[in-house]
Amino acid sequence: MNSFLNKFFHLEERGTKVSTELIAGLTTFATMSYILIVQANFMAAAGMNGAGIMLTTALISGLATLVMGLYSSMPFALAPGIK
Image 1 (cartoon, rainbow, N blue to C red):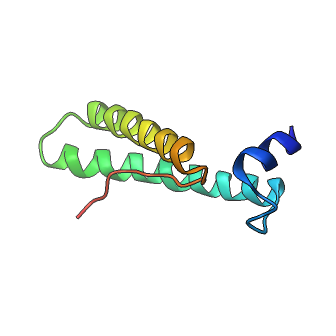
Image 2: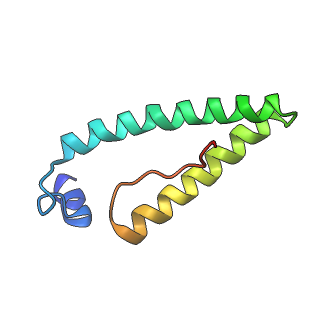
Image 3: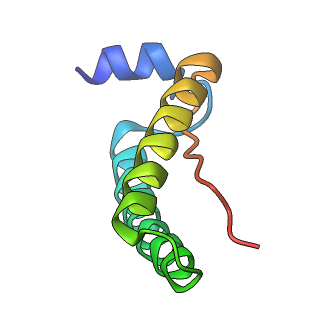
């Protein structure tokens, strides 16, 4: 499994390893979870359906992150921003 991940994401070439990327993934998961909650609360305060906003944000973030990962072979997470 490690060799597949290393080969697909070119981890050794980029000076990292699978364990480092797993920790980074958990950190990113916590950040994305926070974004879901905050985004839904902001939009609910504006009169929108909070559950719908949370679902939409999760789906769009997941799709954008998947496309970014497959296109660039880089583990970047993408989510809508709050201005």
